[in-house]
Length: 274
Image (cartoon, rainbow, N blue to C red; front, side, top):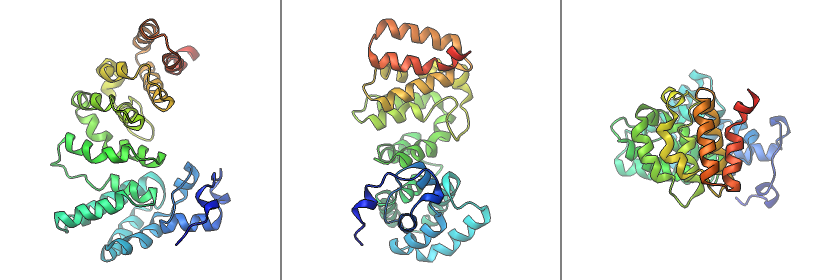
């Protein structure tokens, strides 16, 4: 099926009720990506399951997964994605390792960003090391779609939080990446307060643990990364205001760049208001 160019290059609407019916249909068929948060949240994941699973050879698993999703009464947004990804991971345990890898690859490269989001939760075996889990999630962290990138860090945040010092050691290498999406993930995934997720209490009290990453990104050229650094420090400022202020003063002397200045302004916005 060839999708109309006007649909592919649409800007998206502000309200779910304003999404054109043909666009919503294509989103729920898994034929196109969402272009903004409104569309992303509007996807009906049960409908998407009905369209996608038979096409990738998982028709026999469809009834079980839909029944479980209906029990939880979640069909849209983050909760649906987390649940469906986990259910798919469970049903794929019945498949051979080769078949499972093949199906994960299909989902991870699917045209639908929602299906790629499911895939981010399809490798949650407890016996995988943190290094293995990060290796798995890296392509999702580098995805061109904003929604997949957000789901990527949400899917592994609990694992990162459980051993924060080791996580910082591993993510410090990510902070050196040429890919700004990977650099951004290195910090966004361990924000002290985060968004739509549990706080990391140890980083609220001891933000200095993340200094190896923060110092690498203090003058990053990408605004996407700058925003993450500024937001991270703003999170920390709500419990360790003096530490954040001192770090910003230090950075201002060491790195008098526009990038650092922008980060510092964002980092201290709660302190200034206070």
